[in-house]
Each structure stands twice: as structure tokens, then as C-alpha cells.
Length: 280
Image 1 (tube, rainbow, N blue to C red):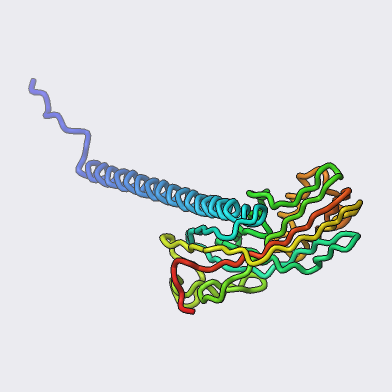
Image 2 (image 1 turned 135 degrees about the vertical axis):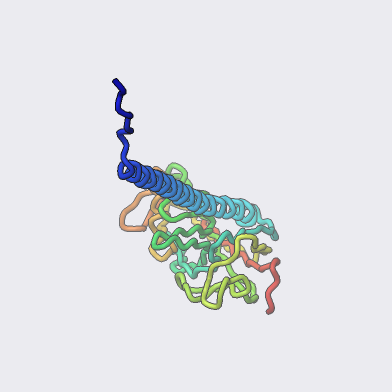
């Protein structure tokens, strides 16, 4: 007896459904690949940006440390001239009009020393970072000092205080203000008329010249008072003094050193922009 012809169990409708299902699966797989690649790209880009931001700040800190090391012999050994450079690295550089108070319970009185900080600011969307050279030390926002100023209290026997006071030669380009002014910048390098941010491939070179050195000696038991409340960053000064066991802290941002003798030295150093040249 003849066997009836065999028929496939797949109907045309089933074939069509399978094709649609395959197409949907392929589309979903492709979408997952695209989204995954996008996430990897976004994450990688964010990490690279974060790394770049950190490296810029660290590079600026190293640059300020180098500047401080260059200026220190002028303050402590009497060198008359030195030069140093600061890379811009997407930052704003200016002179901040800051004040330091150094007095003793004797005849030494510098209640309003205009030390003037050389500052470099990085705008980080609400989490701004500033690196600065002030009175001989290098400080960074929310960090311990990178270069200690010459404020020594030697076991209650001797106080040696060297304060560097910065002045700027009469040359346009670098601005001086009391605090940060976002509306003023290095116009020659600004990306736009209102932008204070400079390009990454430029550097500012200074020539430093010792203008004057004033010494005040107390050759008897005395107490030296240092008040940092009018500096650019009292909290960073606190970190410096708090790390020195010989300094006492009787009140906010005020530190004292009891000594048998004290020498307070105020060195005024004038900065002149060597490169790039601005019109005077």
C-alpha cells in the first residue's frame, strides 16, 4: 500500500514568525553592542578627563614648588636675581593681594605685611583648585603644604621667620586683585573675551629681583605671633603650623613661638614677566 506523502511541520506562517524573531534578536544584540560600546567610550572618556585634570593640578604644584625652590636662596642667602616659569595648563594665573601679620611682644611689629600670593586657579565645575606661592611656601586647596615656608621655632630657643613679599613690575598681562576675579584674565591667551582660561601650550616666565631685605632682631626672651587669617588660605597655613610641634595655637589662625631670641626677616622680591612680552 502506498504511503501518503510526508509534509513538513513548518508552515509558511511559522517560517515568517521565525524570520521576524531572528530579526528582532539580531536587532537587540546589535543594540546591546552599540550601548555597551557607548558606555565604555563614555566611561573611558570620563576617566581620561579626570586623569588629565589631576595631572594638570599636580604639574602646577610641581611648577610652584620649583618656583619656591628658586626664590628661597633670594630670601635666605641674599641672591639678587633668579628666573622661573609656570605652565598655564588651562588655568588662570594672577597676584592675589594677601596679608600676613607677624609681631612679637617686644619691638617687632609687622601687622599688615602685604605678602601677595602668586596663584594658579583651575576651574573644576564647582570643585575649583588653587595652587599658590605665598610668603615663601607652596599651598594647594585641601592639601598639606607642598613646600614649607621658612617659619622656624627651634625647641623654644630660637625663632627664625622669613617672609617673602611679592611685588609685580609695571607690565600688563598679569592682573592683581583682592581675591579671585573671574572676569579678568590674561587677555592675550584667553579663549574668548570673557574667558580667563589660558591655553595649555603656553608658559609664563618671570625674572625675580630682590628689592629690599629688612631684619628685626629680638635678643631676649620673647613670643612671636603669626596671624594668617588674611592669607589666601588660612586652613592650609593651619596644616603647616599644626604639623610643627613647637608652635602653639592660642586662637583661630594665630600661632605663637616662645623663644630666647627671634629674627624676623622680610624680603621683598619683584617679579617681571620676561616671556611672553606684554605691552607696557
